[in-house]
Image 1 (cartoon, helix red, strand yellow):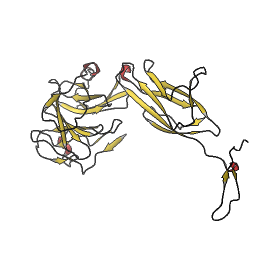
Image 2 (image 1 turned 90 degrees about the vertical axis):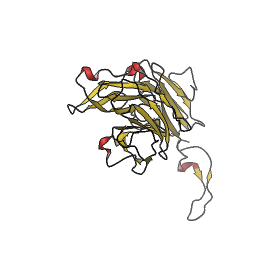
Image 3 (image 1 turned 45 degrees about the horizontal axis):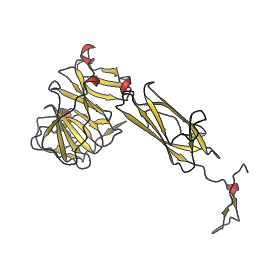
Image 4 (image 1 turned 90 degrees about the horizontal axis):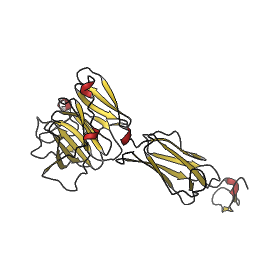
Length: 308
């Protein structure tokens, strides 16, 4: 899902920062919620709106949870608070990542494309500090998650990047093409399918995390079947199995308002959580006894259902 950054959110750039113009005005809004990573141009050194009409000079945008982060050609990642645009921290990129352009994160790793190196560099996404930091910290590298293929297959000027969790899409400035690369199976924590017996949750989509389930009338227990996309990934279901002797994972619905499915990637680095809000059908009209008239009426629920 793409979202345009609000025009009224300013970046309060620190004095030493050489960044001002955001480049990609649209980016995937995920998932982890609140940090925005922005590739910017170092030519202007004063405060500007997050989305500028002069954005033609800047580079890219990505979101996380409580902060906005800006990545500049000066090989530094700037972090800002999403709510007010206040500066939080700076992070140094790898020396080889000296010509950054595009940026995307899955909430664990942040990938940054580089025109000069013709590859995508991978870093562990930093946790924004609670208070503004004056020192420039180095971003932790995740070299085993780099994409080294672009320069080998003609993707010689990788720019904007985005992924749906299955494929990484990389736009190229030289040939006006979009190249695709598979996300490694070991870091894939997506669910392939999810069903709840005697429940209606609608069509399942691996990218969608939240569902609302309505139990069929009279159902007090459901069997949850959840299958991960990757065989090596593990799947945990909450609440715990109510009947270990029965096939599948049984959930007793009394007092339960949510069923949670947690998928952990094969390498253990990522978790993806799927939630189903549980709704039980109310009593049918036949379960009500008493005279119902215009105005106030006294109606007593005597239990039972249409099947009684």
